Image 1: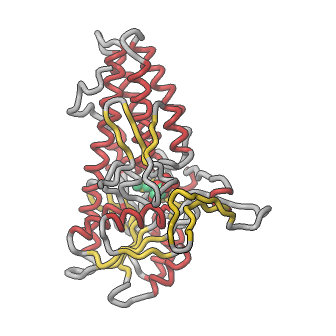
Image 2: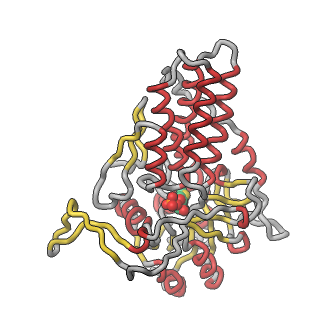
Image 3: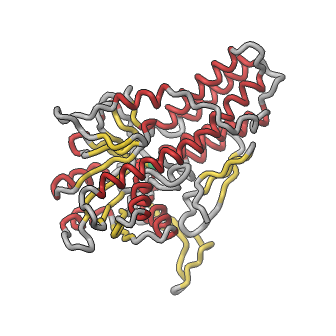
Length: 393
Ligand SMILES: CSC[C@H]1O[C@H](OP(=O)(O)O)[C@H](O)[C@@H]1O
């Protein structure tokens, strides 16, 4: 079974409900932008690239039903712009969603101005571009995997290496293969991976529920640790558990390289620096936001306290896991206040390299990243795919 966070075929969109993983594989139908917004906000679908794609495709499904040649092209364009602005409010930190919305707006506003284009043509231009995002993301991730693996392999030529990752950045956070987990997949495919280590990633447990699920699914040798074990792991220097690099994803990389990622990333970068372990960020160029100058400009989403104070999962009847008997249990003192930021920001000074689909960027002689090459990815319109005509509304 291929792990698919997103299932899209003409006019229908399904998302793998990641709140049910790893014990239940359940797909939810997404019938329009409101469904898409709720699925992203609830984190039934999550991951910086995936939320951008689900948002865009949820509107494509809605448009097929509603907008047609009966509507003036400029009215269809205005409707799409309004819906994209709404979808962007579902989660604020990851830049991919806002970047995709900006590009898709440009496409429909241009299509609406083409002589002879009716509302249907504008809908088709939108749907083709949204569908192309699925295809482009997988190819970007495989390139990230390739370049990241090559960079890490140079740290220990001819040896198999131990790598630690945080949160989930695999097929469940993207259209497929993954970013940081894509690097681990590529290391494994190259025969260069001794063992992957993944953190639980409290409180949503992307690591224990999603990354562990992907690593077991792909039969990649892997060990789960709690978030609090990371520094102790980096102290180990034995051949079977020495960590040569930590590789994580990103939700937004600022122009100077400061990187917003899942909460807990910053302290991994600190302990990596202390232990002389390389710290790498893996992300497509679209995650690099040159409009965000430094960490001070990054909005950090705060999530409900219940996500920290309660745990949900199937119960055991003796040694038997009753998969359909899901219980919610309290794991914190009632009445305690909670601080639950979903992300933190790692300063560029703690990052050794940023792995993109064009290669690994390292800091220059002045100790700063030059990320201006990412500008092109933000200017590229998402070209209608070769599957044109699929979305004639
Ligand atoms: C492929 S990068 C995914 C990125 O998104 C995750 O956040 P969330 O699970 O809250 O959507 C995490 O920060 C990952 O690094």
